Image (tube, rainbow, N blue to C red):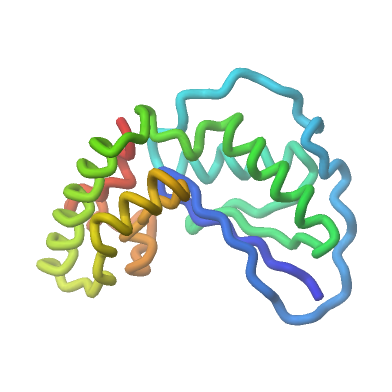
Length: 179
């Protein structure tokens, strides 16, 4: 069985591995190794979702994964036996590109600010005819961000394209995450 890796970018990165229909195993990436692209000092992080998508895709491709980069994220096939190596390379690429680095320390104060911005963003989406999911309670949001590192990308969860002007109109917190 193949595994399909889908990486969706807000200004931060969310990666998930989901099952795909059974098929022949793909060829092994040419260099799926965390040493494939050398180590450099981390960048301050991309400023837009598009920059984040490009940076992450380029890094994974440098490591031999042969991923595709599109407007909705980065995708590719990962054989189950290479999942651990892929995750190690993904983690290295996130660190090297600054994709998950918000640009300032993630503190309770930062979490509170982001939650308030996400509430305002949700209200704007509703006022403009969208049906976004309810936000988790603040304690849940704070725990997910501060303990688990999870970033709540409401635009993505609502199914809004990263190119949709509503994101800028409603001041999507993901467009300026930590900047």
